[in-house]
Amino acid sequence: IGDKDRARLHLYAPGKQAGAGGTLVEFMGADGKPLARQVAGHPSIRREVNHPDRAPGDGRFVQRPEEPGTVYIVSDPLVQASTKSADWIDRTAFKVEKVKSLALRFPDGSGWRIQRSGDNADWKLEGAKGGETLDVPKANAASYSLSLLELADVAPPDAQNTGLDQPILVDATTLAGVSYAIKVGRLEGENYYVSFASSSAEARDKMLAGHVLLIPKAKLEDTLKPRAGLLEKKQDTKK
Image 1: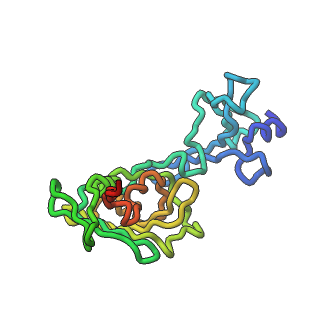
Image 2: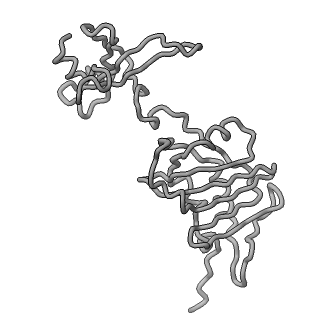
């Protein structure tokens, strides 16, 4: 293979040729020493060859840097050979299960707090005023949603404008006494920037607590309701 085809197939190592770089994949041994390297280039498309823009790759062009004149076509499209962490991360997030108390505070100071005495006990709204009745199914959804969180991505360490300097604060304590202090920042597309601290001893919780996470908006909607959104609607008595 020549330089022209190498550029067309994006088989140059990143930074070696503008607009023609592939994805450099390095394999490391258990001792941390490099074992091998390869550059993953364009997908190989044997179906719909006349319409590559709408056909999924059924393979990938691959080259070893030490063999610049040889290109391999592998049968795996290597979709996880990507510099985008969203393409290969484990999407399991921290999970707040069997919540005993849950409080939410918006940047403007408004918010609410609900609590219950046990797993099968009814939720109570702290500071309920006359005429305010907690909608228990909505309270259940607000707390249970925290056990179903998943990751959309992990933000880069230098992420800017996350909104976490003026966050929505979500404080949850489980029936087992584990606490979670969650900060929900700006909405980026369909995902919120999120960070948290926890007393959890779970290894994954400890690992994730060191990062800014991106969590789908749909996973937090039930929890981030304003106070009025947790109340039963008053029936119109007018006739």
